[in-house]
Image (tube, rainbow, N blue to C red):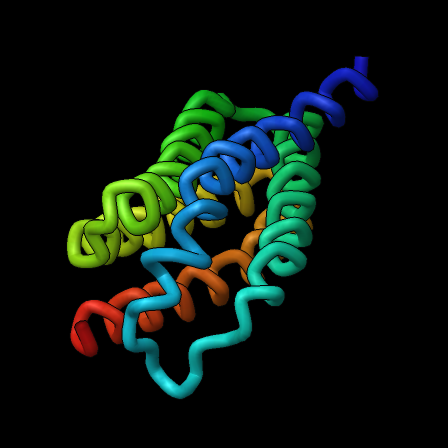
Length: 154
């Protein structure tokens, strides 16, 4: 059932987002506001809409990958997607929940690596699915630079 696959594919990234939000929302007006941030730090109001779009893109990418008619085992792609989405949620726990920006930076480097591997694996089955990961890769790259800047400034 393709509608079921679409719903599952869209829900999975938003579960990661909900987990991240649980740890983020309370820390933003308290701990995060006290940190020194670089001049290029975007306004807090930008993060929610950006992540919403990126989670939709991830969900659509997962759906396209899942429904690809190309021959080949998809286990690796599903596994890589699971790892990167887990790391996505874990970053918020480390940075906002545990207030460990340095550890979160090391973790976001791992997220970037697994995101790139996921993109490459999805590309073998559906080019559009891989293209949907490029904005996410760009945002995680920016977030990594922002994370490192916060570590260095604090």
